[in-house]
Image 1 (cartoon, rainbow, N blue to C red):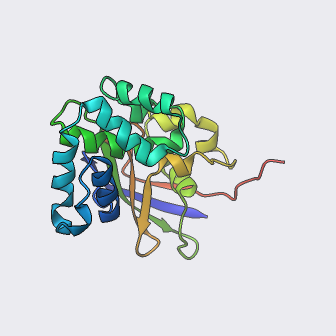
Image 2 (tube, one colour):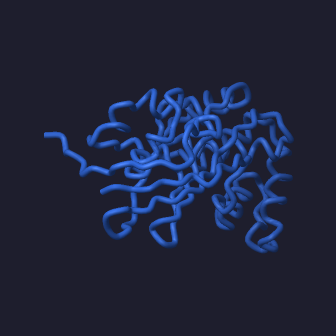
Length: 222
């Protein structure tokens, strides 16, 4: 199907609002030895957590939050290693398991805020765009669909195009797309908001703001 694509703007943000739920805050407060989170005003939970976190050494706090999110996936040794690396590098941009990078970003930024900059400041991109079919009815697009359609508007220096050239340009499966795209929302199946790391897509990556693209049916590998 043929699409007309228009990239309206890219916002660079330090945090993605709504990622951490009230329940997350309450459970994390308990892990940081503040057991009364459930009785606190919901609006005060983020601030209470920041104060509770700051009573700990940065790497200790990182271990606690990493354990909360990844205890079923990482060993204690891995969590300890990442907690130390986070103070030096943007682990959320470099971690080899792409599907963990989004969560690592949210953890990094929670700690960055709590410690007033002791952790590196990673950033996310919120891409606002429309994808209008020119020869059929609009349908809800997947992360894979969207990245393939954006290909024509992205610079050859873009990290996604460099790492996944074939998946972006050919009608073959692109399973990593769901991990690269942290959030994809639409109310009308035409206008979309996409959240990802600034490392994956940033303002400098856009070479065309209006262009056409063809979405082909994916040929499943035999």
